[in-house]
Length: 129
Image 1 (cartoon, rainbow, N blue to C red):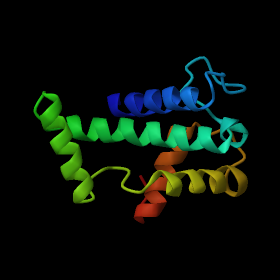
Image 2: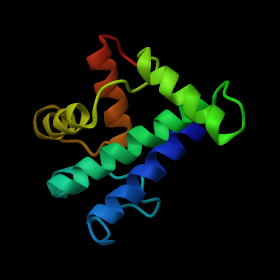
Image 3: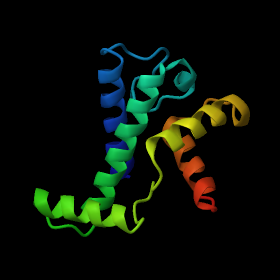
């Protein structure tokens, strides 16, 4: 569960930087449990959110089995990336585009972004997660 928190926290932080620190409309008190806000983000906020999410997940993936030092963690994440071992192996534009599709066509029910990303990732990988 720590990985989801890191991913969501990183995503929220990057989205805040991209949007000039403005709080997304209707964001929940937890901030990272954004639901319908995706459609209201500007394109650069969307890219920043997904980049932060992917960075957080990559960090969580790398921390499993990595030495506790920064160099070891970096080697582990780089190694996972090279062999396609990250849980979210696709690029940020792939996920951002899929989120646009998800919230436009697939789901008009408030779904937290991290759950939408998990479902999208499962579809992209050809399996349900």
